[in-house]
Image (cartoon, rainbow, N blue to C red; front, side):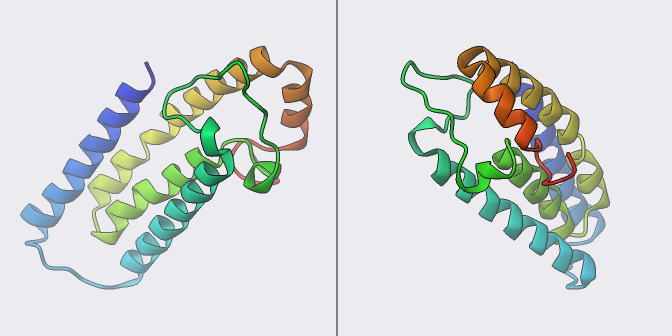
Length: 150
């Protein structure tokens, strides 16, 4: 249900980034501050996703599901934020567009924000249903994706 809109937004933005780079920029790569920021966002985003996936271990899945023996992970990066993999994606995706100096791709990648906000809401509801008060208490102690802020 969620994966299709987010995937479509990502593919459209990636296509726009490539189209912009090939058609409008003539495949001439400029290395300036925009590209460095993009590379930084991409690298940080990938790193956060890797840490999040490794911390979840066998409980990581691309779909929203829990198992009978599912445990609530509250250590590592999950000690500070509930949805670090989404944070990683939200950083790396616009980073791709910035690496290639694509303003079109960048703005389309921002379309992932409402997709992930919606998915976090669904995931939080699913985990409340699974873990009850333990997850509610965890929610009170952590932010969704930005430590100390949101």
